[in-house]
Image (tube, rainbow, N blue to C red):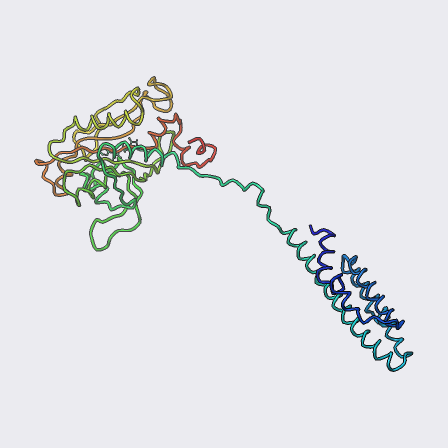
Length: 379
Ligand code: FA5
């Protein structure tokens, strides 16, 4: 806020009648009564304007000294009663005083304008000492964190990371993986088809990929062994949901191809992966399973965190399946132009949601995509 002192200061600063400027300008003072009256008017004007702290007071000052019936006017009316010589001298002095009073009035106006501007500035002032509003920091979704952990476990074992399309051709999702059209194994994946087929090529139908395995064919089609790669990505199935099943979820595919790769390499790699993700105390189970693109095929399960392997509503038999795996089928090698006599390899496909459930003790997969921040904030 601007103080009274500073108004006073401003007024004086512009005041042509201040101590420095007033005296020399009144050196023409004579004993002529009208001139004496004019000088008294000027002194009073100067003294009173310092107290004009608002527009009302300044206007009152103007009316009193410069108004039509003000003191200067009244003094000037007396000029008519003077002799011509006295009138000339007093008239000149009256005009000079008038000029000085007008300057004084203008200075007062400027002072009030500055006061108003300063008041506005003070009112609008930004208080930089107030603490700022905290920026709400987001965090990675638990599944993103899990996918990254899985990728880190495999990259540290020498695997590369690749990604592929979520909208896929039937050829890569099924045909090249040893699942021809009308093969009953297609029923293993309830498929969401895209209502579009390539009219130039018979059988080129589109779908939302049901697993990340089509990337096995895409990668082998382009690259030559040795291959060691993992493929994280989203997959989609036309499936009813329950505590362990979503209709859209992530998978991380793995593929290793080279000369002399055996089932022992597959087991060793996956044991090491389980040790890195779950620690050494978790139990791992391999069971024979069927996938058309591997031979032999297995699934890998981890003991259930909820019932500690006893069997419960979440797991059923005490184990939660986290991935399918096996040795790459010779027909898949043939489909991509590899000689199955020369190369062998293993492949696996795991579900990060299931892994996150096991790691964090989450009893329903649907929590991950319900997007309830109270749930998500815990990770
Ligand atoms: C496959 O999708 C095969 N492509 C995996 C594979 C790759 C086998 C390479 C052999 C060689 P499966 O349908 O079992 O397999 O799915 C693999 C994993 O995905 C499961 O073990 C499970 O962890 C996860 N998964 C499967 N269905 C769902 C679902 N509806 N919701 C959440 N996770 C699922």
